[in-house]
Image (cartoon, rainbow, N blue to C red; front, side, top):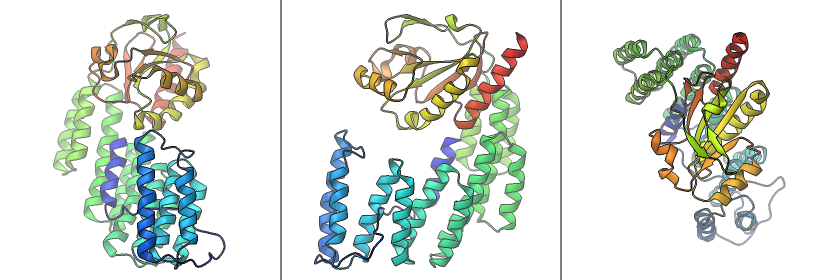
Length: 395
């Protein structure tokens, strides 16, 4: 379902404006014109880009450029002008990217006070929408529809923001395994006269959610039939591809995961068979993989919650830098065992199991058979909880 959210970015192509903070008090007037401000900001933006390219794109590494941005706003002849707003919005986006959500949102709200309409207002709505989509904050996402209306943004843009609420609501229900409840969301979207394209997105979420439930039960043939239904409903090609992919995954459910014999990062023998009787997550990942690291807090949370009940993880790292790998393992408190051979995509186990993208995960039952593939967020926790419950009953 992750790709569903990624596709929502296409619905927001009206948006890519920079973003960052404003000031609580009335800023002093400087001497820089709009043109001079934009030119100086461009130089700072290049520093930020260089920092990311050199591996210093951290909040600490960007402290200098962020401070320069603050100073630049104080030097603006029109501190409430568009250039100053763009600088502030950019800083807000950077802060939010590094988890400083409260600070970033406060900056956006302050900028909105002086830019209630136009491109700046639209950029603020877009930035907030992206955050609320990712966090599935339905309350705030719904409020954005009113903000877009009050800002007198274009009607097509307002319609997109309205439609996003229903798509994300459907997405959230899908992740909770509540496929049938998405039908009501679909009906509500139609009643609200959401644009046809976005109604099709909600419908696509519904069919894919049903496919995921069938996948977890290993019902490949039923997914094939569902795929034909989705085609007749004229669901978008993207969702049809996702549903078709679930057929291949469903065929793996209930099949043995071939054992391996390697050395872990401590030089000790590591095999899957030594975990017999446990619920094991085989996690193909890397520290350089954005989606992997984004999902990692959920993996860590699930491990800590269920480890004492018989849940284990075996990490298979596609990193090439062992020092960096061990640093991340320590910082994130990832205490489970890891296999690392420094070959990146050439990792021996990744090649053995045909891994072509990461994160890639396999949930293995106590008998060594696959019971889940590429589980994310709540789906992972739900699957582990269900497997442990079944394990407990069999004892």
